[in-house]
Structure formats: C-alpha cells, structure tokens
Length: 472
Image (cartoon, rainbow, N blue to C red; front, side):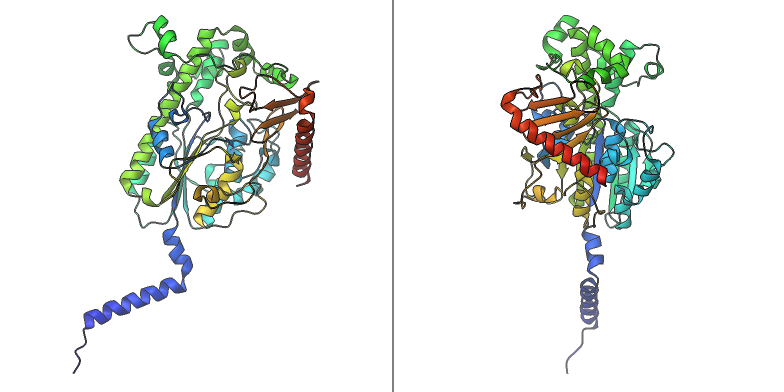
C-alpha cells in the first residue's frame, strides 16, 4: 500500500498552479521583471563637466562611478540649449517648436497644444503602463499653471538642492523590492547658479541679483590659505583656447547678446581673472551637484533596488563657460548644446563603454528609450529613437546622420563632423563649422569655397527638416 505524502502533494500542487498562472498571464510575469527607472538631471552642465571626461579642474566621483558602471555618450545634444524648451522635449520627445516655443517663458506657446500633449508625456505614458511615477526638484515646464501632476507625476518635493537629495534617499530606502516598478525623476538645480555671477556683477540692483542663491558665494571663494596670486597661478582654470568671439559670427548672435544687457557688459568689461574665476565657480557648483547625486546613488545601492533599476543621468543644456567671451547658454556652440548622457542598466554587458560615434538627442531619445526598457509602447509620431540597442551592443543598422537643434535665433543641423546654422534674422544668417579641423568653433567657414558642396547639402537637409516640421 502506497503512503501519500500530503505535505509533498500540497507543495507540488501549489508549484503547478503557480507555473500555470505565470504561463497564462505573461503580462503579470513581465510586470515583476520590469526595471525601476531613476532619471537624474542637473541644470546647465556641459558634457565636459565631469572628471571622467578628462577635465582636470574638477572632481565628480559620483558621476565618474556611474559612467564606469554604465554607458556614456559623448555626442549627445539637447534640442534647444535653454531650460524650458529642453525640458519640454525631455518630457514629450518632441521639438519645442511643436508648441511654438524657442525660449524660456510662455509668450509664444500654444497652451491648447501643450494640454493635448500631456496625455502622452513621459510621466503619463509610464504611468499608464503600470509604473508609479514621482518627480522631485526643478520643473520649469510650459505652461505656467499646469502642475507637475498633470504631466503624470506625484510630486516628491519642490526642493532643488539638499532637500531633494534627502527626499530621494528616503524614498529609495523605504521602497519595498516587490512594489510596482517606479519612475523617479530627480531634477537638481546646479550648476545653474553660475548664471547669477554675471547678472550680479553687471546689474547689482536688479531683482535677480538681489535673489542670488546662497550656493554661489562659496563657489566663488578661493581655497583657504591660498593667496590670490597663487590661486590664479596654480588652482584656477585657464581661459579656454576659444575664448575670443568667432571670426565671421552671424549677426543674430550680437542681437541675442543685446537682449540681456548683462551679457554685453561682461563681454566688454570682464578681465581675464573675472572669466577664470567664473569658470572656477562653475566647477565648484558642478561638484556640489555631484555630491548630492552621490547621496541618491548611495541610497539606491543601500536599498537593494540597484540590481533592478535603470539609472540615467543628463542635463537640460550646458554653459558657454568663457568660450567666445560668453557665459549662460542659448547659442549652438558645443559648450552650450553638448550635454552629458550616461545610462546604466541592470546586468548590462558594456559597462564603462564610451560611445563617440552615434549622434544622440536626450530630448528626443529619452522617451522612446525608457519605453523600450520598460516594455511599453511609445507614443506615436516621435522623431527620437531608442538607445537600448546601442547600449546592448546588438545594433548593426544605420543610425541617424543628422541631428537638429533649435534656439531663440534659428535652427541648426549637425553631423558627426559639421555644423550648419541658419538664423531667423540679420544680414549674415548662416554659420558653418568643420569640427574636425576647428573643434573650438573659432571661424565661420560658410563662405569658404572649398566647403560649398557640404554647405549646400546641409542647407538642403535643414530646409527639408523645417518644411517637415511645419507640415505636421
């Protein structure tokens, strides 16, 4: 007579039912495997502003470690090198011109179109796909009066500095591993405080100058115990090699500078030491942001969630940092438009890889990339592409040949070697640069006959792109 082991039978039956359930409901199984997503943003950080890029004038250990364990793109660009337009793209995957936006502020923005697009924003798309979505820090999205909740997020905190790092830390450490997957956007304000250096110097009585953030003065301070002479001889970054204005610069750049008087004042009046001290402060503010990012990443590791969390780091735009005798952003120069982009995924095979081949747009490509990583269908009609195949190393097709940018004064098309700009105003409206021969963008070669064929080709490509945008 065979003796039945009821405990064993109960276990086998439960195991069988569990397997049957998972096979019958693959969506449920995928739900458990989908990664958490942590998007960390800074404001006004150029691609070169990390020590892992070889920059000897600052130390960014948190971002260096992320890059060492992730995948870094060197040819990554924003859609528009100023805050609000770029942030709109990051949340929608669209060019800012889709809503009539070319600058900060809602003056020309199609508010009705913005409200129409909210349903397919990054936050709402992932939320509809089963993610719990959270946002902390600087927002600066169109339109004033539309809260971050309408973009699909639960607000974690409005603090943009230490409080944001603390809120993200507490969120991660309290998160259960078996909870629904989450998207957390942590948007830090610095090194954006560098903007106030020129404003305060040139317009000390202005409203902006009176509200200079507290982080700026410590960043401008010299190292303790170091004389001013020793500081500039040993510690302070030198002037960039492309410090002087471009030869043959288009007229619109001067018009742009004149729109904000402080830009023209510092360009004319700052001494070499003023420019170098400005760069020193920019480095320190970047380090300040890195230290806060380190708190978030340390909490992610301590929480045990890192093994199933995608981490993406980027910035909305860069800063001219003394190139072409400019500070702030807006123009298409590399310092303002080339931004950092690091992606780290669980169990990734190409840790520490640096991609200097593919042209990437953080504003256009972030949304389709995150949808791909999360297993969610992206909204229709996006111009961007998922970067997942590049990260995985299994992409052998043709990538984009051209990348397009917009700004307040015009439009630009970029290849891996050339940049062509067509402005909306001025007598001289075009700019062309060969980055291989002139990486500092020191001379406008649009009238150089040896480049006629290239210029004509890029002029046609940009015209076709703009016609295509207007037809949508």
